[in-house]
Image: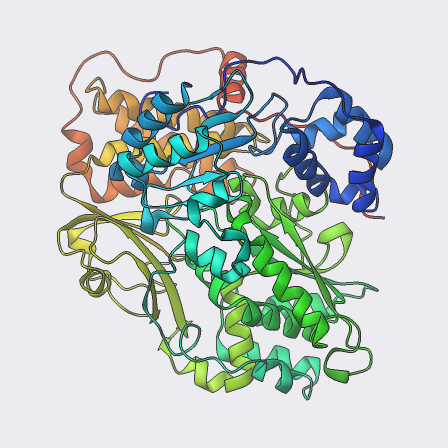
Amino acid sequence: MEDGCRETSGVSTTVCPVAAPPAGEIAAICAAFGNDRHRMLDILREVQDHYHCIAPSIMDMVAEETGLTRIEVEGVASFYSFLSLTPKGRVTIRLCDDIVDRFAGVDQVAAVFEEVLGIRIGETSADGAFSLEYTPCIGMCDQAPAAMMNDVVLTRLTPETARSAAEALKAGTGPEQLVSARFDTLTPHEQACRMVDNNIRHAGEVLLGPVPAEAGLEKAVRMTPALIVSAIEDSGLRGCGGAGFTTGRKWRFAAAERAEKRFVICNADEGEPGTFKDRVLLTERPNLLIEGMTIAARAVGASDGILYLRGEYVYLRDLLEQVLEERRRRGLLGKGILGIKGFDFDIRLQLGAGAYICGEEGALISSCEGLPGEPKTRPPFPVNRGYLGHPTVVNNVETFCHAARIVDKGAAWFHAMGTEGSHGTKLFSICGDCLNPGIYELAYGHTVREVLDMAGGGDAAAVQVGGPSGAMIARDSFDRRLTFDDLATGGAIIVFNGQRNILEIVEYYMSFFVHESCGYCTPCRVGNVFLQKAIAKFRKGLANPEDIDYLKDLSGTIIETSRCGLGMTSPNPILSTLQNFPLVYSAMTKPNKDGIRDSFDIQSAIDGARKIAKRRSYIFDRDFTQ
């Protein structure tokens, strides 16, 4: 796929040829998770880590231990990009292939790894030592180019540092030793900070400034659940992941459901390219996050929580597990929190496995249930019928952190910040062509121009607000304000200077959506492939003026008929650039008869799109609500 998402795995379609491990080993892995089919993703991640492949014989054994069919196990194993039915190396190197990394020189870095390791992108070495792959955004856009090497992250790679790393790996050095010779002696927090810089450029009053420990939770235990919900409602807090639904209303709806059991889930699967704010909060404010989840549990009557951590942030796993265990030891999680009889709440960590779609709350819940990460039909909504059929509150990392601070400082304090309809502060992840990429905590209402001045993006010609699913704006829109009612964003602000090719960026984003579609519904699975092909035709100068109408019409169809937010927002890179950069398109058109709209065989198109998306949909008739 020219200038799109590059292939991330080899061309081989053979199943894993490794010898089957002893049945007892697989049984032990399954038993560690209670032989629970809802923990299928955990089980398969463990298998992948141990054997570097999920072979057919292993799937048979897992199915037997968990009471599932082989096809159900394979449906999960084949869905997530970090799981593989073909052999992977003992060290898998995943180079971030995001557009920011491309502009920062990831191709030169990849060439060095290929040269030193003697394999091409998408291949595994003959001795099974190394696999080399491209992967979409891993949340390190402020320090690109970056790569994952098993569970280790390396950032700011250059051809020189890549060569040093590759040669060390080939000589037998472990990925951890590339970070520090004494890696194992460092605390989990020290390890995380050695791998990844936080890049906090501006600490605001709410989240990144001084935060007293447990102040919100200590006040929450003296409040009734209804008063907690009212405080969150009165503050004006809205979901910080992009959708902006009123947080207090969500909590109230969940609390009002008649149910014996409720759940609280934190969505830490920030896969939107250009977004990395939650990465910083997970590193520097993990206790504040857990405090916020615990307050939410008290408000809605939940006794169990799940922290869903994107697979690309696996390097934070030990840190978060340490925080959870320490809070249990201090009586801040578990039975009788802070000595309050009946206030029982605990959290388990659920790792993802490389699927952008799992940032959508229905797909995330499916993933937590041990299913492929496919969105759920709504209604019912998660607050009515969510995880395992129980009322479930799903909020993201930033939202829970805000909630804890609101309960401490009061609704009026938070409500006074920002603008009408957009209250409080917001974490902005700024990256791309700017001098000071990183995290900026600012009150809502700043203009794009003001933010660019802070980040050193004075020569910006285009800014992608909200990541690919947001909008790309031109200089004449830089005085627009970052609010829910003007330019809404989950946090990503990607800066592009005048040297960048707008259509190259658009084509990359469309290829990203094609690759990350779960493949469930035809409009998203097929329509985005045609949009990507259309943009490629514009880039080659082969489009005609009528093709612009084709882009608009097809985009509208995809938006109106897709099942979830991915499909509903996937045409945005095209629609926003058509609106804000019309001359880019008109300059690449010519009046001829070679239009895009040729007749085609729809079934052939669907089959082709399915291959590109690398997704297979499996229908589960088993009742997973019990």
